Amino acid sequence: MIQNTGEIRHEVVRPRSQMLAICRFFLLIYFALLQSSWSEEICAEQVYPLKSEDTSSDSFQNPVCLPNKRLAFTVWHNGYNGWDKEGRSQIRSADIYIIDPSKRRKEITVLAPKGVDKVNNIGHAAFGDYIAYNCNWSKICISNVKRPNEFRMFERPADKSEGRFQEPVFDPTGKHIAFEWTKEEDEQKDTGTADICTMDIDGSNLRCAGYEGYNKQPDWSPKGDRIVFQRQCGKECWHLWIAKTNLDGSLNRESTVQLTKEHPTNTDASWSPNGDSIIYSCGDDSKAMICVTDAMGGDRAVLLPEVNAHYNGAVSWCNDGYVYFEAGQASKPQQPTTICRVPAPGRKIKPGKEH
Image (tube, rainbow, N blue to C red; front, side):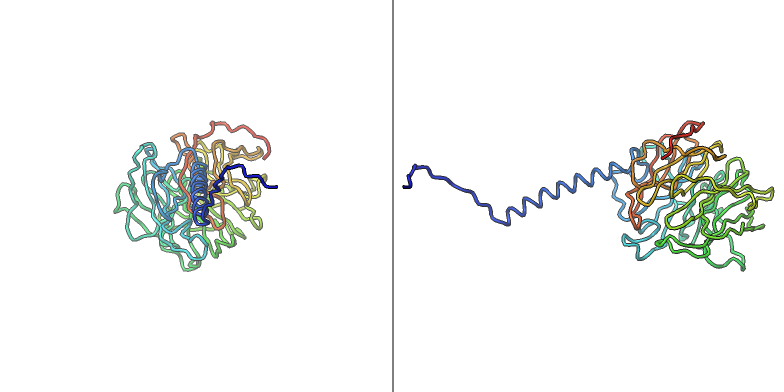
């Protein structure tokens, strides 16, 4: 027997389209919060661009110290190293920006001359008011950051016309330049052949070490006696090596020794201002942090604190008490990065625990 209680119940049935709209709304909120957390994870102090700025596909890379506490860095205008998001095509359009990182309002000076694509190295890519850089993809140029008319593009010798000259740095006297001669390279596959070379400031006395394999990104010690560079040791494997220099500025190949042994990937090295330590990007295929080690070798590397992103590279230790670097989300292909900084470690690097 069914009893009638006299109660009338109303069941609210929402249309399917309304339910989908509600789901989309909450998904948008979720992804907005997730994206916000990603941007906060890049670095505690983002030097350029400011977090509030929309810079589209521009990628800010390779910070280098200049006099008077200024900073220069490369701006690729079509993604990381000019590659699109899929890593299928590359546009070789790049400039060098100069800023004062201590000022809240970042006024930009674009390095002259116009119409020349420019990509600088880290470390000691500058000497006084001069900065050396790779220009128009395959050559080396020098510009004066204060006097735009002082500009020189070095012609390449006939017996070294293949590939690219790139990643130039000065010795502490400003009389010599070390650079990478990239003979062949597939950046997306991380394969190539490259040597480390030196020349005088006027382009004469060009000599290469004659290294076999893939040797990249030299930086000259502020003491002038050694050069650090990275060498590929296999798939997704890089280690740092150090070679002494001769009195004429050339590399002493016989003195070359391996510096790093801990992490699978060790790249983008530069020296501390006093020349006692070397700072570099360290890690593995999934994450790249920042390590510091004694320049004489023998000590375990120390991980730099306050470095939050999954990718941190192109490290320069400046005289203003900060370490500058490029940072972003680790991905393949690498997506655009920003310029960040953290306080420099103490003058004496103490051996850390093995990582």
